[in-house]
Image (cartoon, rainbow, N blue to C red):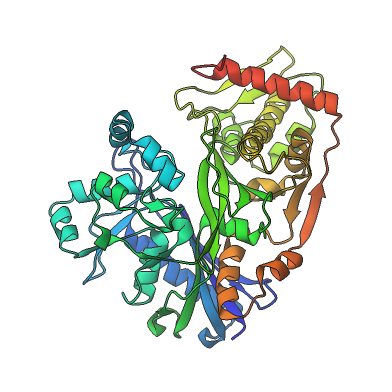
Length: 499
């Protein structure tokens, strides 16, 4: 009974990672699954693809470790957030494909609700913007567009859940219909101050309360998986959305600590303790984690283009053959050139929120080549991270930014050059951990904490291990000059530049 199984159900793949009692990785299994695009801006998943890939990867992780199911003490689940499923309570069968967080089909509904003046209410209760990204309007769309769904929902026949809730339901054979506070906080339906579903918002979106799961702590009992799934009855003791699980995995338990995850885009969270901070910069106020009924809050900002800028270098321009080449190419760039890429390929996210602007390159000369463009692409991620952290510190007066250390994870952090440049642009240390699988580690820790295998958060934070700390080495005058150049480039790109 010394292993913990972490299920990491992501947007493009499902992974299962076995952790030992000392929190080291024992085995990893991963499988990608198809994406479905039935119309422009629509993104869907087959629910059975999510379910089958999770169960099969859990079994594969056990096989790879040559472990007995009875050796697994508990299961932790982390998931792609905001993705919506609705299913029949009696049969457990979904009534529609999962509508993915990236899906934009409810943009018109969001625009109408915003024009009717509802966004202030939504922001004050949930900490979120009125956007198709979140779950509430997706549920409403299913009820309005699947024949008979609304009547069935009103009769109590249907259940809603984000992916974590669907997996818990299936794993427990329908015995448990529950989610955790972090996933609930991303639905547009949950009052993050009172810690309960909000009847005003349910009425606004036309969603019956009977559809909704019970909201529990991140580290809590979520029932027991049936023996048929993994070969033994295993308690499920931890659930958190993926970015919050990464925050836990990075042991960001102290107010003022920040983590940033670099994948296709980037998600940065700043722990603000027991204070839900209302952003002046259109950042999100969200729940970082919840223990013993007490939420810890965070400010969250997202960058649309991070690793995607490297993919553009490879697939769009063809100047590199693999992502790993980008750092070496950037390292060889001419330092006398000041080339800026504003990677607004799909608009700019926080803190600009300009969906209509498009990408641009500035500072080109006859001497500009692939090296300088690669340099600008990687630097653009650093500048955008600085923009997020500056907005966070502007929002939260309790932290003026002094002494901030950013903990990083995700695919891009493998590049030493990119992480050093990030530290240089931030003018602050950047810490890369020994365990790169921080999202899965967070899920495992939450489960192991409730199961009594892993220690309290303070001790866990002491166990967090640094692989490399990147310290800023750029002269401050040069850093300020470069940052000012970035701000000028962004101002020229925005559709409505600030005055």
